[in-house]
Length: 322
Ligand code: F6P
Image (cartoon, rainbow, N blue to C red; front, top):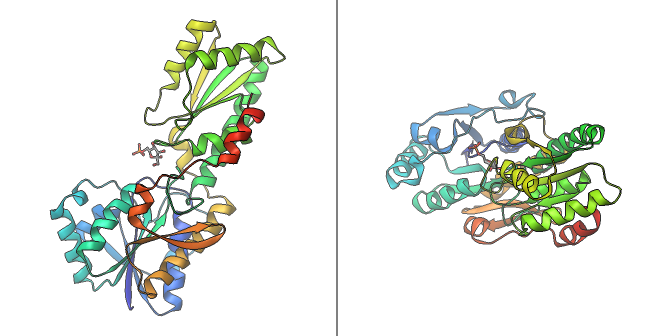
């Protein structure tokens, strides 16, 4: 293998730069030329590629976002868009392509792997952690810590004013961020799509809490496909209980900022593993981390198979969040 390329696609995640850096270092150490594709699949269709050397990835390990830029490309979901992408890969003699992103990125990568001769390797990079085949995705730990710092700050003001707060965190259809940040932040309740709840149940829980020792409470809500829905929940709770509350939506704050040590190490490990997988001739799979070891999973399984919340954490939630 003499020439490979790398792109970032979908929502950015802290640690993507650390992964690009690792892949460039691993490739150059084996005399493989590596190109950076700008703006994800959109840039691949336009042929926006530039060579990357060690200098190009110097001093980026601590930076959030992605130096390559990213996009969600609807054109790449069409056969015409992908044909153009394949032409550009062939024109540049690219023999292997590394895709850092989430499920949308891998769906595109799976189609591409059937339509071109280059090896295609995915690396899980999304704050949502909703990818089967890896215990953690790059960016998740940073997002959880960002949410946790926010919850800690909200607790200060919630205590001072003896208030109920709803803190809404990201996670398109899953509650991974809500579960870990909420547990770490000592939230009084977690509203997570995987664990269905009723507003009546929530109201009874909060009433019991306030009848006891509690003078303030924090409910962590996973956005789960409806960003801003916390306002509705807060309104319904007020109508039923009379509790006045405040809502804090963390949104894209969780996507930016310097990656945590855990995300940088994971990104480094998976960037190196992705280059290794291409050199070994693998294609159509994702390199993830399972029980601390790099492991390959077919791209199709990464979104077809459901990744469950950690059952032990879910069980403990009853005890630790109330
Ligand atoms: O997939 C990552 C994520 O941040 C989700 O948690 C969120 O629902 C979505 O992306 C937001 O996407 P966008 O940046 O396109 O608004």
